[in-house]
Length: 151
Image (cartoon, rainbow, N blue to C red; front, side):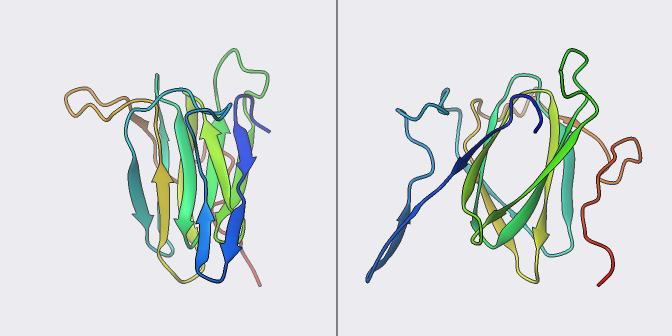
């Protein structure tokens, strides 16, 4: 596992009316601070990657469908430098994934449906000076496969 990545298994509280899932609370050990809340939809076959933040920590939870979350660590002082990590999260595996600053990350919808990710980043988006660095999703310098090949 990449240093600094934290994962929280989420529980569905189900009854005959439906279900409720608590994702992140202000008294949760994973909570740092609130910047904003947003959702990002990803269409099937699309990869939204790679990007990283210098300051912001992301808190990802897939609330509809399923996604592959990809992460790559190239931080010079990290004990996991050069490592990749992938997680499949969403309806089949409800989890909260905490991604620290300077870890490259992205997402791809799995299956034939649009997947929806909820993010609670520690910083709000600054349009004048975005805290975001981008790379091509298929950058050969990152040893990561977004989709399974074969049958």
